[in-house]
Image (cartoon, rainbow, N blue to C red):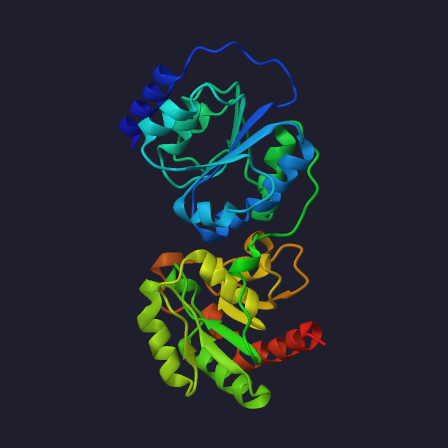
Length: 345
C-alpha cells in the first residue's frame, strides 16, 4: 500500500499542469467529486444545491460513477457531468479546467491523486477517508460525529460558501413517472452488506399483516444480485409481486415514486425513497441513523435499536442480534402511522 501511494503521489504531482495560483476567494470553476454508490451519491445532492446557491455565477461540474450519472441526471444545478472512467482520458479532458475541486466521497484509490493532478489551486475533502493520501489536499477537515450530509456541507463552507441544509432530491422527468392503481407497499429485503439485513421472516410477517389489514398489494424489490432473496420472500407472502430486477436506477426510482410505502434495512434504495418523498421506513441497528439516517425528510421514519456488540463485527457478523430486537409489530405500527399521515385524500 505504501509503494502504491508513493507512486500515485509522484504521478499526480508530475502530471499536474503549471498554472498561476488563484488568489480569489470566490471559486469560478468548481468540480464536485462523488464516485461511490447510491446512498453516498444521493447524500451529495444537498451539497450540489448549496454550491449552486452559494456560487450562482460559477461553472459547476460533477465527476461521478455510472450510478451517479443517473442520480445527477436532470438536476438543475450542474453545468456538466463527467463519468469516472480511464484516469488518463479524464486527465487530458479535465486538466487546467477548474480552480476548485471538492472531493465529497470516493472509494477508488486513484480518484484523489487524479484530482490532485488536474492543476486546481484548491483541492478540499475530509481527512482520514482517503487510504493514506490526505497530504494531496490543499485543505481538509477532520471527520466528525455528524450526518454524512452535514459533512459534505462543511466542505462547501470550507471553500467560502454559507450552505443551508436541504433535503435529498431526485429529479424525474414527467415522461418517466408511473401511476399504480390501488395501494402498494414495497419491501426491500436486501442490502449491500448482509449484516444490515433485517431477517426475511420479519419482512414476511410485515408484508402478510399489511396485505391482510389494508388490502394492499405487496411489491418485493431488489437488484439482480438480490433476486434469490426476493424470490424467497415472495414465497413467504402469497399474492406478492416481484419487481423486475433488471430495471435501470431511474426506472426503479419511478417505481418508488409511484408506490405508497417503502420498507427496507439501511440501504441506498431507502435514501432514494426519501429523495422522492415516498413514505419510507428504514430499519437500523448495526448502523447509526444519526450518521446515515433520513435527513430533513418528514415522510420517513426509522425503527432502530442500539448495537448488541462492542465493537460491532460489521461484515464479519453472521447473526445480527441487534436487528433481531426490532419486531415485525414495531414496523407494522410505524407503517400504519405513516400511511395514515401521508395517504392521498
